[in-house]
Image (tube, rainbow, N blue to C red; front, side, top):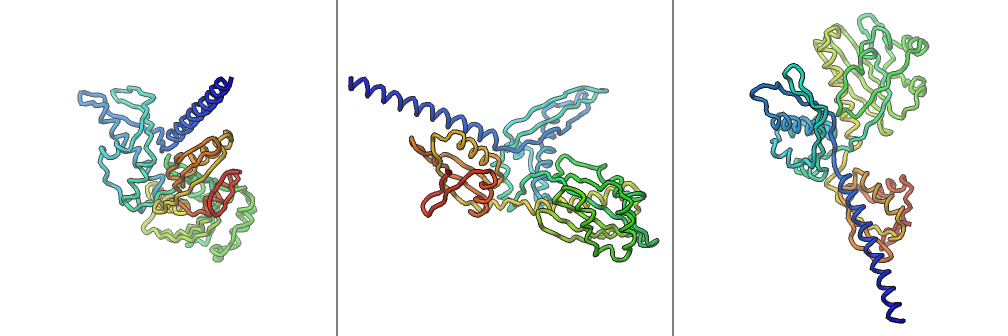
Length: 359
């Protein structure tokens, strides 16, 4: 009887550990799938003639996808440092790709390309170039573009303001900022027109508070003959920055001149947003975190947090027993930042001198 009882006990332990290992494998696989950068809807095309080479077209698509990704996660200045990257090097950082919507129209081949880049390889590539990437977080901001005609001493907020009317006509998939422009309100226009020379000092809070957005950009565009001066008050992530730009020999009636100014301003705004969200990959803080091995929902919640936190460069299971799982986490930030981040996800952390533990 004692032998039977021992066999039953051993079998229960065996079943527990087999189940537990399968549990670990499941979550590890989920982590690997999440550890990537995906670039979608890149259009590829080529004449369909005797020289048509599908592999060449796809390789060109990989290059475009790579630079779209770089445009999304680096500032314009850092992007200039990596203009030359070989196709071979780019392909070595790709995990997978998908081609869809293939079609032939008038002897022209068209398709859409989705490319999945290995996140660790991309970050390592940037680290070698001494470039700190940014968290690719989209953000909706209130934009108030005000056109001031210095020659005629007039202020335009809506009508006859090309920046208000056409600002959102130009958009790239890799842009992170989405702009909401104020709805037309005659009272706002009347208030601004009374300001004239003092508009640079106006706080615009009455107008800003009408919209449920934390971040905003106020661009005051001064037009004086063929010169354009732009003063932008950029409020992002609870931080206010002032930016001054000058454009000479500009004709706003010329579409190319207008597009040039808008593109330059959008690059400037995107750079401020990216700098606010940069990841310092030179900081590699090792953290050891334990969690009860039977708290399956908490384990899943923790792994989901680690998968989706851009400051977590890596994590893995250090070891486990029948009571606890011990995670090793490599974090690109300070311990205080980690504690604040994990608290926002309603994950309770118990900290003592010797260990960190999920309650």
